[in-house]
Length: 151
Image (cartoon, rainbow, N blue to C red; front, top):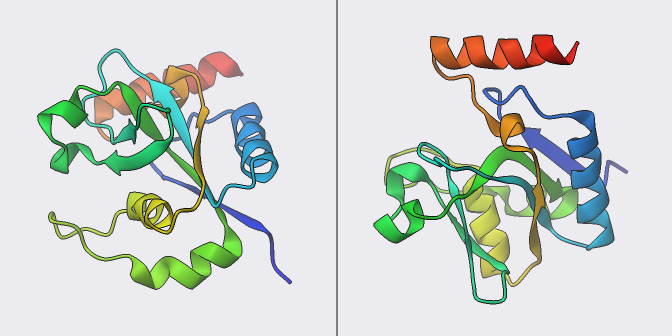
């Protein structure tokens, strides 16, 4: 029998702390969620996927920057590039993932699939610094500086 949960981390997000990953696993298990994602609130969320919530603060979807409406782009709670999934559910539903309007497979679609199935999806907060990506040479310098400061 395999693991109960699978963590998926984006390769361009090297700043997650062990404490945050432990919190992700604790919360998905204690809340009996099918999916969990790391979230952060950013003053400037440009370039990041957004977490869409209803009036009760439940996650109702995710919006990738490329495909987000103006209203969704105004949301400052972002997806941090780290997810946890119930392993059995993920393997059973992975084939549901389709290419989006940009022609890409996006892991965030698995969040939308879980929501459409009425399953529990949660967000676990992280510090803003943890979700910074390293997609450009300038961002790489910034993330490297943060990692060196942690030593």
